Image (tube, rainbow, N blue to C red; front, side, top):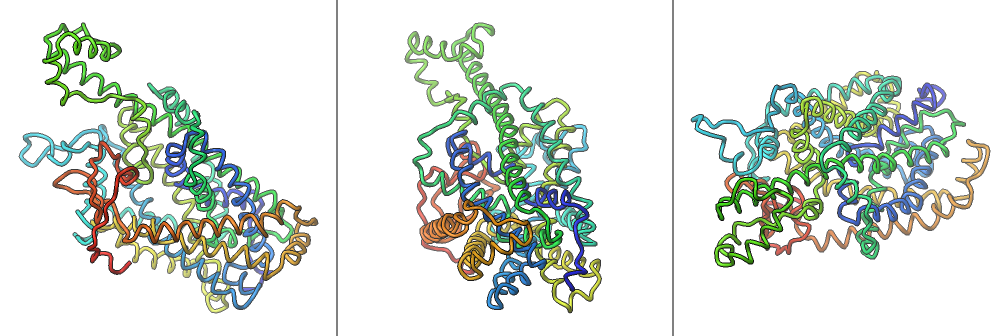
Amino acid sequence: MEKDARPKWDSPVQFVLACVSYAVGLGNVWRFPYLCQMHGGGGFLIPYLLMLFLEGVPLFYLELAIGQKMRLGSIGAWTAISPYLGGMGLASVVTSLYLCLYYNIINAWSFWYLFHSFQSVLPWAECPINANRTGPIKECEQATPTQYFFYRETLDISSSIEENGGIHTGQALCLILAWIITYLFIVRGVKSTGKVVYFTATFPYVVLFVYLIRGITLHGAINGVKYMFTPKMEQLANPTTWINAATQIFFSLGLGFGSLIAFSSYNQYNNNFERQAIVVSLINSGTSIFASIVTFAIYGFKATVNYENCLERTRLLLLNAFNLAEDSITVDTVYDWIEKLNATYPEQFAELNTRLENCDLESELDTAVEGTGLAFIVYSEAIKNMPLSQLWSVLYFIMLLLLGMGSMLGNVTAIITPLRDFKVISRMSSELFNGLVCLFCLLLGLGFTTTSGSYWFTMFNDYGATFSLLFIVLIEVITVSYIYGIKRFEKDIEDMLGHRPNWYWKIMWTFTSPLLLIALFIFYIINYIKGGTPTYQAWNKELVRIISNYFKCICTVSLCDYFSCTQEVVLIRKRSAAAFSGF
């Protein structure tokens, strides 16, 4: 395709909104709050913001500059810099394709929950009746309604990755719907995407703001917000805190996929991408912090409800065990009565020790969870306890859908744009070619709708793109700084913007960012080698609990909170790993 015939964004605002819609995704909602919780609350913001300016903004700027200068997708742009670097652009396309295969299944789950929200009683609010109509289904009764709905109704999950019970029809239909909408969003390239991003980039903020107002008015929400902004400065001495801050910035901005290069290739040649890189990066990080306040308000509500329910169970236990009057013990005086009864009736109280629960609000707030466990279980648990729960459920899952769809626009564009730069493909109509790409991804993605599909989703998400993206961006910054030449790159920027980049950008590109990426790459390699055989969290129907396959570790959901059971347990790896011989 000739460069002068290349389509363009209707305005710089469209480009900024497209970048915001792509960069601000599900990770801002379900990953960043988890990292804050794990690494010292407000103290985590210190390494996070440092990494934003040492790594995130400079690399974001670099990719926008390359795309706008070359006016080509990732393959063409890197081939133009050097014929030997075309493979790096191809690596970006393959990585984006890898992501597209499984990312839309999250949108399918969101559609599933959204459609089930239009009921008089949310289906994850109570357990369904068994076939004999004698009581709740055993699996649901032993777990919780929210866990049962996610694992059994939504996923119909098998007990291991080796068990495949066929395609879940409902999930397959939701995935088809997700891909149809994705296709309609990109059917005519930037002409379609430019219109859609006005909605996908802005409406999630409306929902987040509404949820913020609702969240801070919930009972106990202030406990969660205080927990977030109370810094634990000792966490700054933990190297993992800094590593996680750097990786969160890296993946949150969507570096290395080729999406930013593709988006900026449709800019006017003299577009001010420097200012846009700073604005989008700040919006992305600001959204993470904003979403965390909302999330911790929900955390506080959930933790307070669980804590007070625990106190109520303890109160009833004491009343029944010691034959006390109903109003003699209140929730606020439970611990006073425990001390009093223990001193007065030590022998009788000793018999209750095994039945007494340790009710601790701080422990409830310390329970960390991320990913699908946060989005589809913890949030659902909180929503069902809200007044007008159906309304809040609809709003929440629409927000998840828009965040997911916005990211999908960038992922698919990263595949389509570089391929359409080839003359053979450019002769095809956009509608036909874009449709074939979406159909190809849909057919391969149907594997994630099987009963073992969620395990494959975890494998792809945890091990699919991490190394390749770090390697791609490391080669990018080394290529620009030392092969293409930083002086030559300065002149290109001056040609587009009318001024050269200042000393900050040059120091980041030539020294700081490459060193940080090398450190991250080495860290991941060491962790990967130490980790050995990949693992996954499996739902055991008989035990009604999460188990870590190939680890001598069993975690009850109540103690380990869904997908985080390997955080603080000693793991003893089994030698046998036959099921993972292909990884």
